Amino acid sequence: MKKFLLMLPVILACKVDLLQPIVKSVPTEKVSTVAAVKNTGVSTIKFSGYNWIVKNGPGIGPGPNSWSEKNAWVDDAGLLHLKLSYDSSSAKWTCAGVTSEKNFGHGTYQWMIQGPISTLDKNVVTGLFHYLGPDGFNELDVEFARWGDVNKPNVNYSVYPASGTTGTHQRTTTEWKQSGGTSSTHRYTWTNDAVVIKSMNGFHQDDTNMFFTKTFTPPAATIPTVNMPVKMNLWLFRGLAPSDGKEVEIVIRSFKFTPAT
Image 1 (cartoon, rainbow, N blue to C red):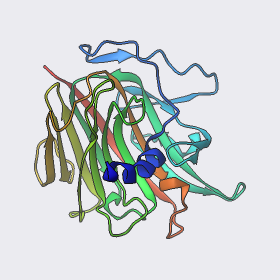
Image 2: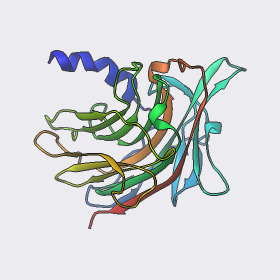
Image 3: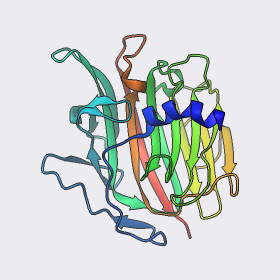
């Protein structure tokens, strides 16, 4: 209990995301349409065959932070760019985030990333994840972050329990020294019985150059069962400016979803 109470500030600072689509699907469907965020000001982009809502606005979690639709774009080659930038006109740092218009169910999720995400500033976070909530439930994460402390491991994997259960948040970390350039592949397979995560140096469709793997299984982890949107973001822990004062840009070369059979 004492450990859980100590973790609450980090959970609350990192996980609240106001851009939450409404679920209108049942868990057995592999991909289902979201009854979207009804806001005429919402911008969307097309990436890896899916539509994504671009996060925009001030004082929004996680962080809280300011988010700009200008900080997330797809280039002519079809690659997604996420940028953390300093806005001199407002004297504020602005973050980047996208959320899928669709909800996804059981299957394998894979991201290919170009960028030095193993050496991010201690206050910078890159997230690849599912999130539906309520906060503390229905979430699967791969996060590259040191949470404001240079002595903490730089890769974090989490499984949050299904809502309505007594399951607890399960988490594992590793220290990653990127090798062979700045390309990497990150993948997890989500089933009713387990979440299996794998991370590789380089771009690979298999487990070549895998530097970490972990399997989360009940009862240690109560696996989420509801379909959820996928999110990708680049943001500042607790809204703190990068300690090195530098802007950051990462490129997500692809996102791939393979439904469970």
